[in-house]
Amino acid sequence: MNELVKQLNATIKQENAYVFSMLSGLGQAIYFPKEGILSQSAEAKAKANKFNATIGTALEKGKPMYLKSIQDTLGAYDPNDIYPYAPPEGKPALRKAWRDKMLVENPSMQGKTYSNPIVTNALTHGLSIVADLFADEGDAVIFPDKNWENYELCFGVRRGARIVNFPLYDDRNRFNSAGLREAVLAQKEKGKAIVILNFPNNPTGYTPDAEEGREIVAALQEAAEAGINIVAVTDDAYFSLFFEDSLHESLFGQLAGLHPRILPVKVDGATKEEFVWGFRVGFITFASPSEPLLAALEQKTTGIIRATISSGPHPSQTFVLRALQSPEFEAQRLEKFDIMKSRANRTKELLDSGKFDSAWTYYPFNSGYFMCLKLKNVDAETLRVHLLDQYGIGTIALGPTDLRVAFSCIEAEHLEELFDSIYKGVQDLEKASAK
Image 1 (tube, rainbow, N blue to C red):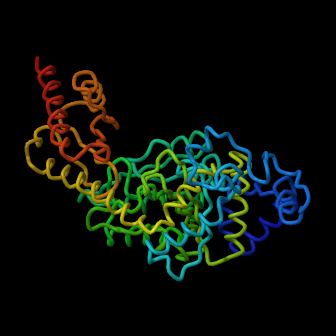
Image 2: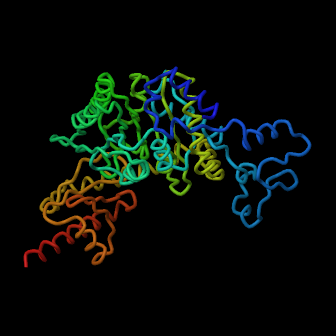
Image 3: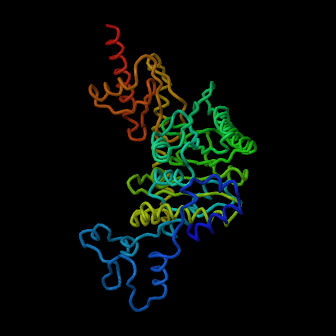
């Protein structure tokens, strides 16, 4: 075994043996090389004042070489902030800026100890890193029955983990914390669970309120006290898009330092929060009272990045950093937030009008990009195809009754036409089945 692996694992065991037992086989084996091309290049960068013939980039007159046809579109940026490789863990200034942002937006993180965010190639990459670090074949990965399908690929297909679902809503149409509690406690014999908390939820657009949040935290704490090691992953892809009286913070802050058997992991990013989907800039952050443990987890995470994508794209990190540093950033973000909120409010107004009650109900939503209809009389996939073929309307079918509608991409003045057309589609199918 590599000496650095031995040191990292020894540190994690010493600081929190429960966290060490949460690591997958790959998580225990991975490390970021201290000796190699990157470390030698870093040393050369600091000391090679005559010639630096180390890293695989091309220079011209002391600056990164570039094509004019590309730089012409990027003239506002220094070539040094665009063309060289970014560090595997991400641009230092961006990591600090995101950490500062998290702390402002999540007051519950005040006074807690957490790692510096590590830059990922957006949210899916962050979740994939979590899967690599913590999920082994047969490990339980717990999330609601209404979920983002990529969880199955990241944890189930890639890592062989066992997917455990529970109903998202209880009989009062609130978050089913009792179902979560039961699903986690059922892992007592195994002694380990990976729990994914995705709020605002994709596909329903639901975020729990403060009371529900306390119930979720209590359920995980009870399971930890029962001897279950829990990797608590907050998938905060749609963070900040809270339109009503729900939690306006990530549960990461409440989970940080809660129990030695709970390792909170925050996965978030600029993708949805800053409306830069194609930039592919995300972050992964760990919480623990132990600074040495956090440093070891950062090293292992950086090792995963080095072994897969090497490092994230430098230009998009620079673009996001420039935005975060802009004095106009918050006002511009709030302007877009207000547009999104108006679409959500208009959607709810239309659905509460009563004109569609014969065709569907809808699942509670208060945040994010989406909402889900619960169809009463027709099959969701049949309706989806019919809407495409006859009305030129795209929706997402999720199971036999649920139809996801993304109000995020529909102008507010067009939402009534959208839902009227979906309603007509339902009526078409009802008439056809009555013949």
